[in-house]
Length: 441
Image 1: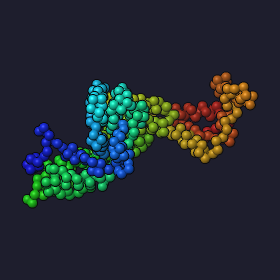
Image 2: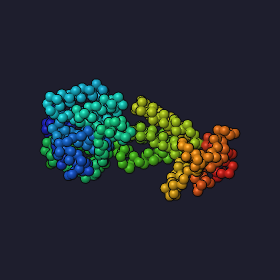
Image 3: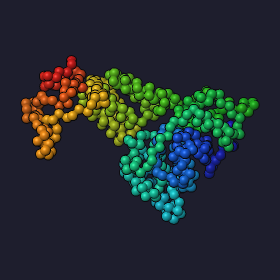
Image 4: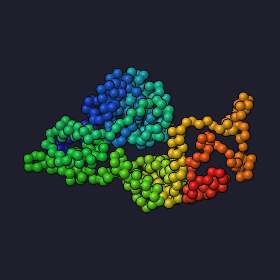
């Protein structure tokens, strides 16, 4: 290990991590994302034409968002200014824009402003970027792991191109490992043997940076054998990664398994199981807003009018989670999921829209009954538009039984309330009102 420490590159006395040393210098060295950087693809063409444009790079951690932004800046010879949305505010953004203005006006040089985790900027912070990106003072590159449609304001989205970075394939990780062992100025001088590359890739959980950091630490933890060989075993890799990260991968099968268990436990009225799977997701680093969004969907799909308040509570939960963030957001999520799991269930409204959608897709677009048509003009009134329409509020119980569906569908029932919770009252009322249109019990 003394050899390793002696050889490790340093900058200003500080050791440079392997992941930083292995950042590619050309697009051909860049692992993955061939749909963006391959021959004839948009980002490669942008660089070849020296026409960089503002963009949002959306993808999971460790797939190369920061590296790609750096590559673009280097290859178009622009100054690279990096801000983190976690620690930077409007003041930092303004300072970066002033620097970019100076570069453009005094040096004739472009500036790429890279904002990592741009989804963490609030509306005011994102607003501060609009004018400078629109005028070309900065080329904005934002990186996000979250859907920009939800997290980035519309005006900023309209000024940017959104590129989706895909998970790295196994072959991409093999390339990263091969390059590290053969090209890195430190590892290339050490005789290294990896017992199981697939195991290393699996531990990395789809994150190229994590893979390189784990590989570097594993080499540090392993003493060379008598023959000078550094044999990296699975046990060493487990020690190097020191985490159960593999148990919950946000972007692979286990992610879908656990969110499925969470939803099904809540739907199945088991608050104990629901809160357990919630803890698993949060412990694995899942975005709490993703969980809150799924609970909003569940509140309509699986609870519906059995407890109409469930949707209000779930929607308020999303707002609260957005306001306070983790770790306190876990308290909000726990309160709401235990409520959702404990309250009555009904999928009647979900089934109603599905049945209506089936008819809309498969049947002709039937005309609106004449008495329901709007009659804003004299001619329309003369044609009978709105004639014989009964205004419900003029009648007892604010109801009069009349036809609202097209003639061909007049007896159709899409919404059949359950007898659960509040929905039981709805069913009783509808059957009482619509004496000629009984809903099955």
